[in-house]
Length: 303
Length: 133
Image 1 (cartoon, one colour):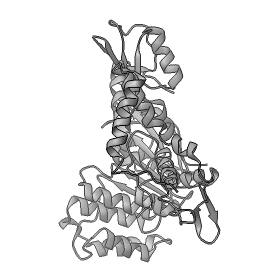
Image 2 (cartoon, helix red, strand yellow):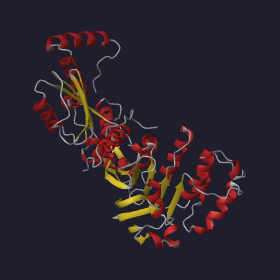
Image 3 (cartoon, one colour):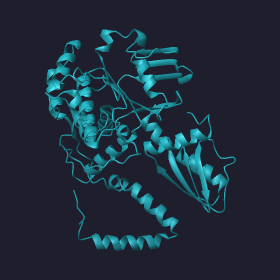
Image 4 (cartoon, one colour):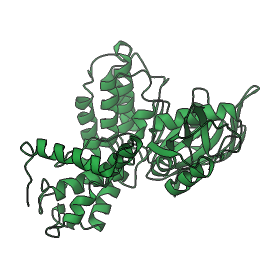
């Protein structure tokens, strides 16, 4: 089952098309990472899902309900933390929690106390006097304490120091429940997401480039190095080979459809005496390779 | 603390890395039969991984007979088939492959690699004596 589904979702700001036919499904129970460069449409997509923006076309369903009809019942099961969240800055941390508590039937006072300690938050300090890291932790705490079924995090890590990021991840995992806990996280801090996400989607210019499991994504990408005789141009190379570079007897490229036997055979077909090495890639490297390839050829390679 | 040692490398599937580390610890005798294996929750929190991934790791280890689940205790390390030297050798597959690829790239022959290997074996012999379980 999918906790979030969009169909051909589009959104325009005046003449700018921020989302273009975005069709996306977030399976219940997954940790789903929405990746994309700045301005790719991640925040717009999340705002439409959270009913903070109306779609210009298409539909979005969250917890089985059209996003424009999200009501109290659904919102009590959704936690939303955004980079640019507006918080009542005149309140103290304690006042913020006292204010939020009555809205959520599932509020867990024990978890609230535990996270307050774990996050090292000063309960009597006003939000406007908190550092950015502390403020984000306060926002996260107020969204975790009711153990939401769906947690939506928009660039949660941006501008946070490593210790705060670590606190953030600990807090997240503290509320995890197998099978009944879904996280949608948008980020360009890919390393934070790599261990957590089991599904990865890449958005480019408001459009979905791909959405697949982390395992299959990491499995199909390899940086391949070939040692061979002479030079070889880009013409006639397989479409899955990205970022081809060749320089005096050495060539390297990123294979986005790597399969050991097939990739090696494709290399040997072209360069008979080649010695071939394939290296696994981090999510960051994959992201960079795809973004560069996307710039070069607008259609890109989809799978 | 986890009862086995692991350093997760980015870019490789986490499931495979953890399963490999656990098998290595079992085969080397660092994880003894009957030892309690960490819960999905602890595994997820200690390694900072998704609970789904932690669940998959445990389920795979159970399916492969490395762990057994008992209703009261959770998962414990299973009694291993005695003296399975082939299983131990298989754990070196990746390292061996890397060595062979590097040697071939350098144009070295098998005999030269064997000589070097023997020298290292001898040099480290005292520091890491062979252990039998």
